[in-house]
Length: 476
Image (cartoon, one colour):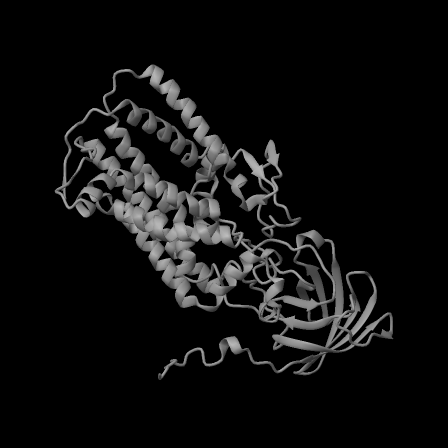
């Protein structure tokens, strides 16, 4: 299949369609927030972090906020507050339904208006081959730059970290849909890595002109599937993933007629694609400089920072160590409120059940009560441990999660609720370690009542991990 660079005259419909999508993609891709450009000059380049890479990767066009149907649903821990939107809508379908694409519709409307104005001004152009080339390149680079964060956080598996003790002991039905989707990856890091390497391949194919069509096709197939999964599981990146369907189709569009003639009709075909020649020396050097910067910053630097984060400070897992040798699940052997023994009852709304300690400073317990669910999957790249909510976000039922600080001299634990809907809740508990298997706690609960507990570690094996490395051989 050969390339044909002959100049053709476009039809009126082709011109109007291109003008519309040219304006549409510019609106969708080019950041309009002045703070984005300020970050390039205010970022601490000596202490660069993956959070900085994300903020320098651009942002989608958004002037209308689609409100969540669930209180606390947009809580992403301690991430900076979103900008205030002048227009907020409250559709019945919530933030994951058809109304979530309202900003796309507005951008396309701007594209139509822009195309009409352009048509009135430009009466002489026979085609837009050069602009078409640069727009395809812009869309391709936009896709690979936006993909790098998700890619390297899977290659170095930190997007879906190992399952916490509290997650292993939360009833399946108490997880929201999105969290179910994410924790499936937490158990199979090899598949998470595979997805990351596949996304890296897409990035590389989009980076080079001769492989751009293959990268767009794979982007539609793989990232498009992620878009469908995010719609199915109420995921938070459905718009980002859906952009790869739209952008991929646009990049691939000019190859489709030749592919159809060659594969379906079995006829000789040529690609009527015009590439910009970059014939002038300054054009060549500018192209080399731009491509080198993109490759260095969004491939090499991003990969290094994600590796460093994975090895030393995985952004979803709290880093402060928890109570020494306390990790595990505990039965509540004794429970007193204001000195009165409270016998076990699965229907008691105050008595703690199944307390868990993690390797890090998170304590969780279950009560027979309901609370507002915060977050979905625990997204975001937060600095503070209390804001790293992967083990708690998207969890319903009566399970409560607290970040705690240890004062070993006074033998006290200061607990703070990790759910931002209850961020004012503060518990102070004295602890004693009679032995390695028991913990005594005494202090106040979230309602200000005096409580005393005796916890005893449960010996529990998890079927999920049993024989997972053994080869399964089925003999018929």
